[in-house]
Image (cartoon, rainbow, N blue to C red; front, top):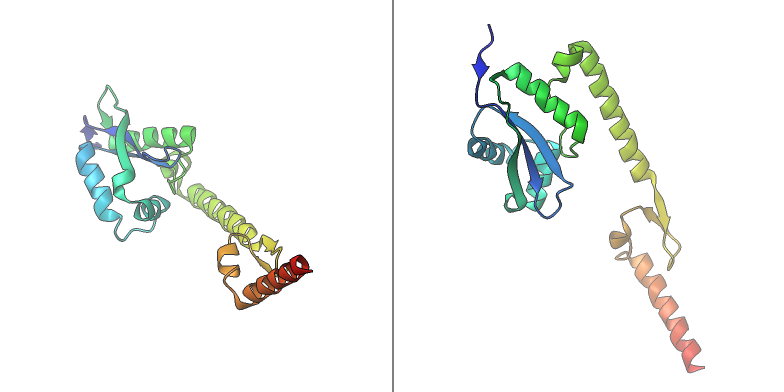
Length: 172
């Protein structure tokens, strides 16, 4: 028989400066202990949530209870509840849906996880494949790479030539 826990909670960790960035989890620990464990784990773990937190810092993150079951729950039921909240709210910093293996079985879960990861990789490739053209030197660069592009010698030379032309036109 599975143990029953009375302290199970569903929580949300969110960025106080950008509340659209959040993570939903569950725990049988106190909120303070779980938050501390997340901080400790974030040093080496490589999930979307921990990458985000390392980028913005823990000082911007806050944890709140979003659901506290009135009745005692098992860890398995807590996972299902957590997954329900994740499915409903679609938290951008969660990598997985809790309890998914319980709901649909391990094999089907693995197939769905593979499909999700394949779709994510495809989306990343499309984003990487987006090419912009510089208005100054007419060279192409990857979308989001303008800052690096404008530092290139070729771009700097084209900019200098255009400035020289403008100066000459003004003098004439």
